[in-house]
Length: 167
Image 1 (cartoon, helix red, strand yellow):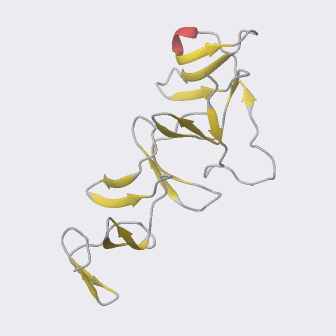
Image 2 (image 1 turned 90 degrees about the horizontal axis):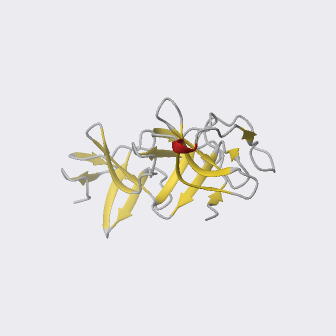
């Protein structure tokens, strides 16, 4: 099955050009490190690859390890960094200047996210929202720098309750 990609530069990209990010080759020698992979007629692997450090990378259909891309899978979206490894944790995107949070399994978080006891809201693409946001017919305020949801406080003259919603 050919995987679909949405090419997006992640924070480690220093420049953004009109062409696709550079893709470099890495030899595929141990097929038991592959998850859901296929092998084309030329013997090139494609699919997820587990590195010796336990992190994951992704080979596209012509046997190249991808870097600085988004991988869209049926179960979620994944970010691949400049080193060719799946991103986890907080990660800034150099193209849209927004923050994303990738779970320990590499999937981009969407919707409500609690991290280190603080609440955030990620849009349907996984970008952290900031400022005033209407979510499920209720208003919330997320710090414009950190994205942390405000609660039990007045913002712009409006009181936000313990659950962060406007009262």
